[in-house]
Image 1: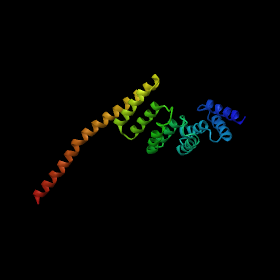
Image 2: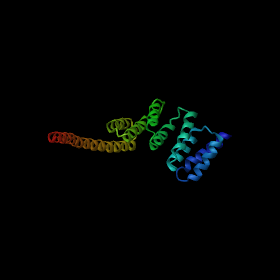
Image 3: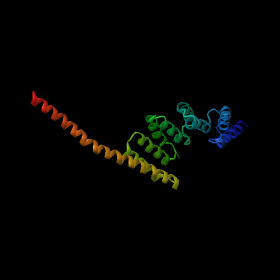
Image 4: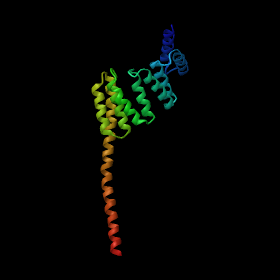
Length: 191
């Protein structure tokens, strides 16, 4: 009987989120009181904290409980990685992506998308492009593929801009080096 009641509260929370946060949180609290290790309830509570309250540390705690409860639950990993990215926990996010890639039935296209976003955050644009191309290849619906292509286009523009800026900075550095040597030479000739 408890399982049915817990599921009812979980369904109410899922229906209410994100439009009626008060109802969603109340239902999640009831669901978690019946079953504290319910992965779906823990993940949804983590999303409330991450997406609505920007309380990433609390969200990470709920995600950690979800992973401890069922390490093979594929619903955990995309939102957990997004939370880590938003909190600038890039090393943790990379470790989680690497692990999640080994979980059976996980959405690898979605994980490659997140990998690309992580690499973009680190300004590793060429590697990000490769990850986005892999995500596009693994995409199974047109909307996802179009979204990945827009991400890829944005990163390509960033990479091209970065390359242009690096090319224009090199002559300036060379000029500064030559200029400093010129001053030293002039100074020596005066002495």
